[in-house]
Structures are given as C-alpha cells and as structure tokens.
Image (cartoon, rainbow over all chains, first blue to last red; front, side):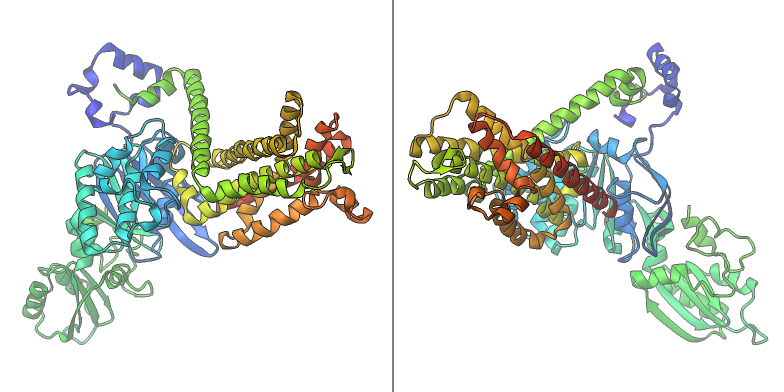
Amino acid sequence: MTTDAYPADGWAAGPENSLVTAASPTALSSAPPPSVSLIGLRKRYGSVRAIDGVDLTITAGEIVALLGPNGAGKSTTIDVMLGLSRPDSGEVRLFGRSPRQACVAGRVGAMLQNGGLLTEITVGRMLESVRNLYPRALTVDEVLARAGVSELIGARTNRLSGGQRQRVRFALALLPDPDLIVLDEPTAAMDVESRRAFWAAMRAWAATGRTVLFATHYLEEADDFADRIVLLRRGRIIADGPTTEVKALVGGRTIRATLRGRNGSAPDAATLAALSRLPGVGRVEHRGESIALTCPDSDTALRALLADFPWVEDIEVAGAGLEDAFVALTTDPTGPTNPADPADPGRSSDPASPASPASQKEVLR
Amino acid sequence: MIVDTAETKATLGGRDHERDRIALAAVTYLRFVRTEVKRAWRNPRVLLFMLVLPVILFGAFSSADPGDQLGSLTVAPYIMISMATFGAMNAILGTAGRISLERSLGWNRQLRLTALSGPQYVLGKLGVGFSLAVLPIVGVYIAGDAMRGVHLSAGTYVGSAASILLAMVPIGAFGIWLSYVIRPENMQAVMGGLFSLLALAGGIWVPVENFPDWLADIVKLLPMYWSAQAGRAVLEGGWIGPRGLVTLVVWTAVLGAAAGRAYVHDQLRT
C-alpha cells in the first residue's frame, strides 16, 4: 500500500501510470503522503492553550515518541489528530486524508488514554463486535495472538488486570490491520513485567514497517522504543529529533555556577560561546553572572569547565528530571540575554542571540 | 500503482466511489445494530426487565372480572396493550440509556475510530431499541392469547404493534437526550423513576379512564399516553386520531431537537 507498491524504476514505468497521473493531477507527487501531517494546530479550552501551534510530519515506518510532562498537550494533540476533537485552527491529514476518512478506511488504530472496554462481555465477543465495524479486519484470534494475550479470549472484561486490559486494548487497536497506530500513555497502568511484554509485542508489530506514535512521560520508554522524539511543553513542540540527540538534551545533568568576567562583569558573548563549545555541554544559559550548563555528560563538562575557567565559583551539579529538563529547555522568558525563545523553533536561530546554542539548533529541525 | 486502490477509485470513478461509500455506511450500520441486539439478548437483566416483567404484570393486572370494560375494551386486551407498550418503552429507553454508560467508559470514542460514524452510533442505538421492542410486544400478545384468551386478527396484531412502535418515536428521542445530559452514575436512578412516571402518565398502572378529569387532561398533553393509546385505537378498529398524531409529532420535534443539540454539544466538548 505504501512504499512496497513502488516499482524499483519508479516514474519511468508503464503507460498505465501516466494514465493515472494524467487523470489525476493530485497523484503527481512522487512520494506517498506522510502517515501524519499536522499543520499549525491550535486548540484552546477556555483560557488554556492546550495546543499552541503544532506542526508535525511523520513518514511511513517511523516510530515517534510524543514526550512531555502531564498537561503538555499530548492527549489533546492525539485527540485532534484522530478527529475526536476539532482544532480551533490548523489542519490534520492522515495518509493525505481527513482523520475520519482514514479511520473509515481502517488505516488507523489507537489506544486512547481514557478509552475503556465494554462491560459484561467477554474479550472475544467485544473484539468481534468492533471487528464488524471495519470494512476489512484481522480475525479476533489473530489480534489477540499479536498482542500476546490469546488466552484471554473467553475472559470477562471486568476481570482483567490493568496490564491485561491494556494489552486487550492493543488488540482492539490492531483489528483493522492499521498502517498507523497511536498510543496514548499505553503502559500507564502496567507493572514492569507487563510493560516489557507490551513493548515486545509492539516491536514485533512495528517491525513490519508500520508507523507508530506514542505519548509518554517516561524518557526511558521513549529512549527504548522510539527512533524519534518530539518534545512537547505547554502545547508547543520544543524539540524534535532523533532519540539520541533529544535524550542527550533532556536526560543529562545541569551544572550551575557563578562565572564572572575578568573585570567582575557578567560573561560576554565570547565566553558564552566558549562555554557552549566545552565537551559534554549541551546548552548554555545565563542570567547575569549565574550560568547553567545542560550537559549530556556532566563529568566531562565539569573537568573541562574547571580547566578552562579555573575561577568559576559556587558549582552545583544536579540530575535533571524530565520536568527540570523541560524547564531548562524553555528557560525563563524574562531572562535578558536569551531573546531566542526556545519554545519557538522558528525563531531560535536568531543570529543576534549571544546564547544561541549550537547544539540545540542541531536538534531542532 | 501510484496511489492505493481506494484513492484510485476516488479519482477515476467518483460516482462509483460515492456508491461504495453509501453501501459501506449501510452495511456498517446494520452490522452494528445486529451485534448490539445480540449483545442485549445475551444479557439476562435486559431480558428480565424488558420481556419477563411486562408478561408477569399482564398476568397480575388482567385477572379482574373478564366482563369489566375500560373505555370500549374489556380488561384483558386493554392491559395487554398497556404492558406491550410498557415493555417497548423499557427496551427503547433502556437501550438509549446505555449511551450514557458507554460515554462514561470512553467506548463511544473508541467506536469513532471505526467506520461507524457518530450519528450512526446514536441512530444505531435507536435501531437496537426499536428492534428489541418487538420482543415484549410479541411476548405479551402471546401471553394474552394463552392466559386470557385474547384472539385478534393477524392484521390487528401487526397493526397495533406497528402503531405502538411508531408512537414510541418521541420516547426514543427523549432517551437519547437523557443519555447525553444525565451523568452516568445517576442514570440508573433516573431511569428507574422515569419508567414508573412514564408508565403512570401513559395510563399503564392505572387506566386513564379512572383518573380524575384534571389529571387525565394533563396526561393527554404528554406523549406517553398517546403511545399506549396508539395500540388500543387499533384494537377498537380505528386510529389514534388527529389530536394524538399532532401531540406525538410536536413532541418528536421538540425532543428530537433537544437530543440533536445535546449530541452536537457532546461531540464538540470531547
């Protein structure tokens, strides 16, 4: 249906292809439409901007983690993406169509955060009743096997453990044999063992070249499973890149210190640039003479800092939790020397910014 | 192949695609109704309330002197229609009420990811309710024949059943409206009270002929009385009459608009 359908010689192919393109100018694009395309999405709930300008493109076969603290807008983004909620502005396309059309065609499966299971029914019958609502669907036995819970076919839905419920919901999402699966905090109710088993089943499914998007607030989970991380905070994408890079950005430690210039003043632009070039440093911020270095490798960074700036004082090294990392990444908007708002990737390349962190730009696409 | 098959169809044969889309929608709707009817059928509580209770009540209430008259009918056929109507009301309101429960489970959101659309879900629940409503009508008619010797012509059986069902349309809209405005945790209590009140207003517990005049006048402004009356009128050899028809149509419009508004509001909220 997607890339497999393309002949190796692509466009030079036979006359029936040119016939299709002649009849339909929209088929001219040389690549299949992306699995997910979000353009300028915004949604408010009252005075809260749940999504505040999200642009995101996910191509076929990507495994993407939507990472963010609670309240970052992950669930709202997913609801809007699936057509369960209407954006105030912006556009959603799944495989080049509206979410509704993509759902009707059976190309999308999802585990919603608050999506429950029917009560007073067995797992098998519940799956069968939903299976009837797709034009084409895998058998109930098949999806239960893929989710690794074949033995639950006769179990009543209200007798399942938290982990079992999630795996049954995974089976539910697999029913239409979707090309895109969307998971909103899929392992929230699972113990460690179930979590491992769930991701093993998920990996097996994703290995067939499907697209996966999952929301989580566990960095480890994003790191273990995704090959791309999209960081969301307060309804905005603040970083988007390969897992290793984003992880380095949010998973490290923060070195805080006081650094005066030789004449006792706050560090100048050259000093800040030198700091950002130190090995192990991901990102530099400062307010007055206080500096904060976000470091994927704080040990190396600290040695280098002490070697190059032996007069540095009041050194603190703190492990950055995900929430801390987000705070660090988005910095204090009132900070006088950081005019580039990192929450807005479009503006972060402001050349006038003395603190414009090179490594951050690498990560931001 | 440049695009997948569905899109090729959409670009090369728009009309065929439109026909396919409608066919798919119809098939999906019918499958939904069939599956849901089967599910209700397997639920003993649903069957008890919808089928067994009206039959038992018929047996209990129709045991008076068979010669007694209520309006122009004798007791047994009068109570037979009352209980058939009561069972149909239980089926339709009970099924609509499940929307409230399924909303609280998030199940309706899950279903919106299938080919079943939101409106199809709501209309599907009505379809299920009206399909199930046939059951108590047939059950009570059989009980009427077996227990009290009420024999009617085939035309009267079918006509009165159809008349009861048609006159239930405002009750169906009422049920949909309720299930979008009542919190699911309160639904059980609301439905319990409502079944009794509606039955009372429909002259199902106490024949309206025995009501004081002022109460009878009020009841005749409400749809439930006419829902029951629709069946009795057929037994009397007539039809519900213009006053009944207008009352039912007005209530259908009012409650249907309320249900539609509540539904749209819910869709925008989530």
